[in-house]
Length: 134
Length: 134
Image (cartoon, rainbow over all chains, first blue to last red; front, top):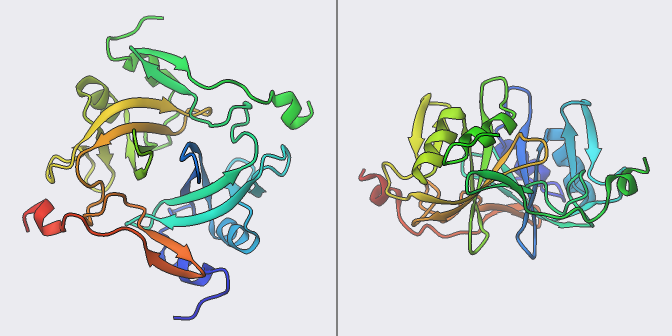
């Protein structure tokens, strides 16, 4: 099997994209193992991520390639890319600079169900107006 | 706001299901923080999970409610249910009995891209014929 230097030619044939050409991607902080966020990639985003080492997603709403942190500065360095048994989900181990969530929290998963009520479990570390200059 | 004892009436209005009524769900082992798998839930699966404390998914291929481990015995006890900022992904902290993957590995994410090649990073702990009695 041939391989490009970044492995995309080995990985891409194993990825089962959905009918829109998308695959869900979980980003996990490589050392603390916090689950940071879930977003989507298409083939272009996978290639951009592997060739640069900077995580890129595909914005389904904007229909555009999106380098994580391109506006906020809160980038993700790729540490490891993993594929699941069915080939239909990617898991990225990343090094998240700052906060992953657009609300300014470290992780997007900051709402939890506790004793039947929704509670917020994570503080805002960097307010959105600092992230986005609004 | 009223709440049912299991919190489903508080959670469900915050979940943004896709056009098929599905939401992606990440299962993470609560203590080791391994990312185990990704699957899908609909409203029925969320309600079954919250009311029983045993994780249920919706099988999109079989179009059926599926209690994780109902055939293999490799069940998931729900420890914590979390929702992301956009309401379109759930993160479950679970206690996974045995192996999460139908291949007999602890996690479904056992293929990684290393130096441009796909390598398997997790051993088979329980062979599928033991899990499924084939």
